[in-house]
Length: 397
Image 1 (cartoon, rainbow, N blue to C red):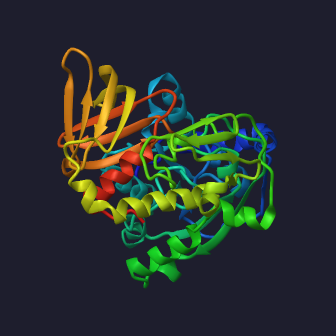
Image 2: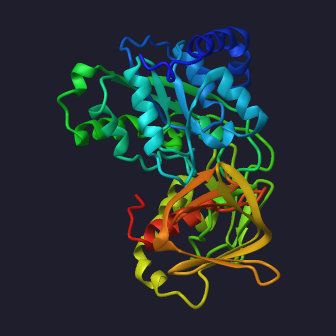
């Protein structure tokens, strides 16, 4: 058994058990969480779940009543609080916008040591309520170790706490195991076949669930922050023209709408785009359909954002390079400009990785450097990610 991998394991198991008994009931009450009881039979297992809430890891521990190491963003493991988290539960770190080789190897090492691992294969909380892209590399793990697979799904979490929003809402979250697959069931399957199982079981849509259950998610200023998702107006097709106040939102072109307590978008001009899933699908399709035009747009910027902070990540520490910056996005590049003549140009083709943290931090690997763009009130990270994927001919769907 790998001694380094198992270091602190008894402590981690005790902390899980202690906190589940001590505050599990409180977390369930705060999140209005219910779940279908299920006892996992396989050992070890890789547990995969969709992801919409910061409470998801705790809710999984409560509902599954077992210990597993989480793959978690390295961001939460920095500073004094991060050291406490590492000491108490020993998560497996994953750096946003960086290569995942070390993380994948740690997952395999833990499974080989008989330790269950849980991860969110989308790598991000959903922006629109539907399941994000899942890398095939997740399925490849099963060809490198001997473990079972458990798939888990949360419903309601997105509408309770949309990633783009300023404020969370009050409403119900439900959790359940979708499927459990033994090593014997998986060992003779191809990577493609395993991947198909994962994608099928991970398929979630907040509005498909909402159409069936009609649950209310009450809160204040329900629409505020929606411009962090809705970067392209479906009426005038312009970038960065959506504004929100209270429960309402509008575009400079005159389009108006309301985000209601059921999570739907109401408005005469946007009847075809009455969910955030449909709006984001429109945005992605528009980018794909206009890809060649956008690639040629190298003189006039496609989009702008201002009041940004730029950091370089050096030895896993943030080093501030400049604040008060403006980004301009073109068909071939992104420029980051500030006062005193500060300019940084990043060509889309040379950005190898882009990662997002919450709604306010964008991570990019550019050659041997890693940068973070940050704005405290949030900005449309998904716009940068989507443009990068489309303009470099990567899949966006």
